[in-house]
Amino acid sequence: MPFPRSSGVLLHPSSFPSQFGIGDLGPTAYQFIDFLRAAGQRLWQILPLGPTGYGDSPYQCFSANAGNPLLISPEQLRDIGLLTNDDLRQLPQLPLQVDYGWVIHSKEPLLRKACQQFRSQADASLQQAFADFCQMQADWLEDYALFRSLKDAHRGASWHQWEPPIAHHEPEAVEAWRSKLADEIFYHKFLQFEFSRQWTGLKAYANQNGVEVLGDLPIYLAHDSAEVWAHSDLFCLDSETGLPTQMAGVPPDYFSATGQLWGNPLYNWERMQEDDFNWWIQRFRKLFERVDLVRIDHFRGFEAYWAVPQGEATAINGQWLLAPGKQLFTRLKDELGTLPIIAEDLGVITPEVEALRDEFEFPGMKVLHFAFDSQPDNPYLPFNYTPNCVVYTGTHDNDTTVGWFNKRSPDEQARVQRYLSESSQGIHWDLVRLAFATVANQAIIPLQDVLGLGSEARMNEPSRAAGNWGWRYQADALTEELSDRLRHLTVLYGRFASKR
Image (cartoon, rainbow, N blue to C red; front, side, top):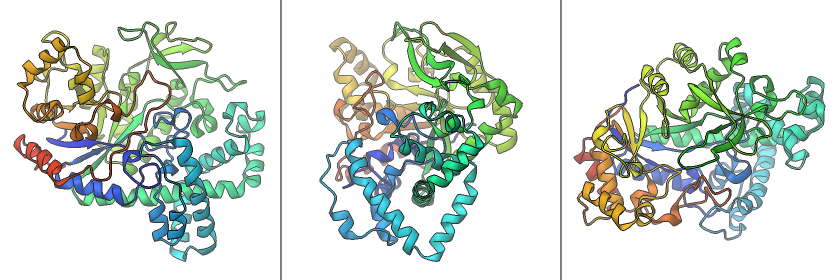
């Protein structure tokens, strides 16, 4: 659907400052919303909110529906009587950048104590809210809580390495383990309840202040996830080993001679069509309960996807297979109504992918970092934009604008400067201004670019296996001067008054 002219900021909640080693849904999250309101911003874009697994990537989560317990605010747990000030004061001093191992080590004891207090002391209204949550979310929560409890019982091993009866989700084994792990299952349900309670409050505060939340849907699920384990028939898996028979990725291109082998299992689209896409309808319905708009990562995979056979070490020996994207989105529209979806259509995109995107009026993405290194027909150059698109200076996978510019050769820097007529406010503000001035209906800026930070603040480097997703901003970074400058550009380029 086309969106009204507006602007916003890209920032994942893990990047908020806090004393607990990772950003959370506590006071600094609300302060960030206040900053967005003061700066005239209408959108807050986040990354996927799920519980992260190997590599700490929000795009490789243990569930498509669950929230990340590490984002739960201990201060909010204290405010409802489940923790004390002494509990919070006993935490070790953690680094500014997120060290996920230390965060888990220091935060899990607090979460377990809060759960114990909840079971023994929570008032009747909170207990009833928990019971209602468990009942309303049972279609995914039961499997997820058991899955996480089983992983703990198997020392973190992937589900396909468990004993065959439970690995194959056999009903008798499920019931036996459900009884055996009842306390752990309760703990994981409590974490999801508390995450939901805190997130719902924060989102309501954002909406009350004129800010909509733009969420993110990874097209593929991690193999080691609750949904793949519990609904194995919906994925291309070997019935004996549980391993993917076909893996997701992208073929070789200019950037990689061997392509990218992601390893996620591919969907059994034939089986999903037999069920009238019910799994996808539930997935989108749950996501739209949590956010106002959705960006679909790797949108092109809904038209055709690169399938790599199991056993391949690279993505070279794959093939393109057609996906029923048109049927899926038609079904979603019939069931859910208007679809506030943004299509991540970066990279090599075919006319067929563009046709699928345009048929449902999904805005595509434009990235200014990609605009200056080819001919005038480059689709990322602003004079080639059409209104129904979303422009970014860079995304979570890009370097920051300052880092990107500093790594360019003098000739390449001069090419950018000739286009921009460089100002004295820095390259990051030049690109923010350019983004806001385009005809794109929406302009979204990573907070790192608003702050003018260099490569040290990069969120993710896709070619790097570890050390990503750790950046957080300093507690005093969001100044009135900064919000005034952003608000000025928002008003100047007609993005301030737009409301949905």
